[in-house]
Figure 1 (cartoon, rainbow, N blue to C red):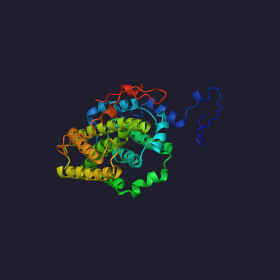
Figure 2 (cartoon, helix red, strand yellow):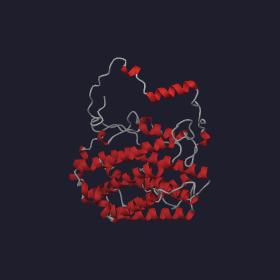
Figure 3 (cartoon, rainbow, N blue to C red):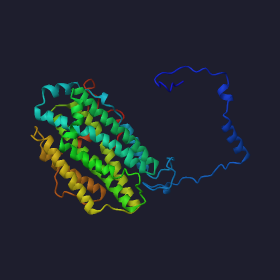
Figure 4 (cartoon, rainbow, N blue to C red):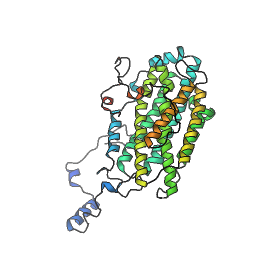
Length: 378
């Protein structure tokens, strides 16, 4: 029997013969009797119809999964479970040597500040999905994938903590850096503002203005925060990996990037469904302001973490890649490109989320492992 005071301990329970089988609670017995007598209607609710489901403001039972209105959302959940991993699966021993004996001061500056930004960002992402987005969804198949997404954001936070602890960095200093470095804080401040705008207790998505505010917040989260800032944010570490440095950390980020690609794809598809069902579009000026604000924050951030170029990577490439990815996200949503003419500055970046290669099993975990090998990245 589970010990509720200490769930890790159990104690035997003595049950008299036939006790469980012969004991029925009086209230349960009363309901059985009433059903048999016909005094309780057996079918008091109408069956759920898939057509009654909506992204928000649906009228179907939120507790009933099927019939599906959005089978693609259920497939996202199934696919996400194929990419299951933990940071303990990956060998970090070489990273300790690399950080302390091979990286130069500029490379250590890049490594530390990327981790400092990510540690705070993924907790913010977890809160946004769980508090600002998921609870407003009115179809359970949407909520179930987002529940998995909340778990994955927590897993990512564990991963950064594992890297910081393994390398031997000052945890308090790294975690507090976003509070004292304006270029890191700027991105967090923007994200917090857009998250808090839809955390109001009085928000009503049947109100046109509130619905527009939610739409813009979700667009920012899916297309900018996860679709650009995260997608582009791992690239400085990947540039070290391409030179044979910090390979354990980079592999950790590859698994995270696989998750983030799915988060972004799910968010964009949900936003398009929301716009179609509600007959709304974002204000073009509000969209432009969002992209310009995000670009300004990314420029400041890139110029700080890459204040001196590292071999094979510089701030100008990071910024141009942000613009290029921003155009991609806008096109996926059916919007105009915010940065016409932006070029792909890091053609190798997409490989990091689609990588399929064999590794020495005793050196690190095989990237193309059994469950991950079943993922469809198309």
